[in-house]
Image (cartoon, rainbow, N blue to C red):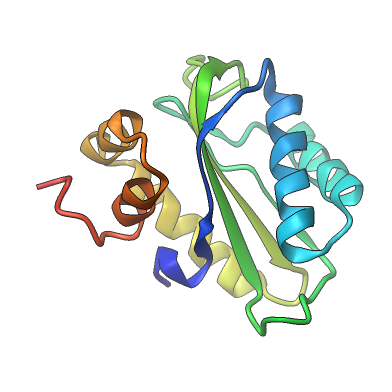
Length: 158
């Protein structure tokens, strides 16, 4: 599974201003509500429930919040959707390494698509293991460049 299969360019936020993890999740849930037409309050509840099971802060300043919920946008047969945000100021995500998070990639999957959901999470985990990738994202300010970096369509990493 490739990132462009679940991330649309318009779902990249180059500068998200938030004071804490809950606010980050709330803003991203609102963006998903506008983009996908799903219930943002229910999505936020699902994301917080998932965080309560264990942090999605994977270390290195990166978090991969995710959840599954029953929905199917009318405009798409896609089952997994991503939203990326670069935070203006790093926040405590209770990450496994104790570091604050400034790069957040939220995934939402339809409950009927667990295989694609897991493939997307695995793809992102592999992608963000590369410190050069994370530094390129931190340096980029243009949403189109951020999208290109995330989808491997940029030579910014070379």
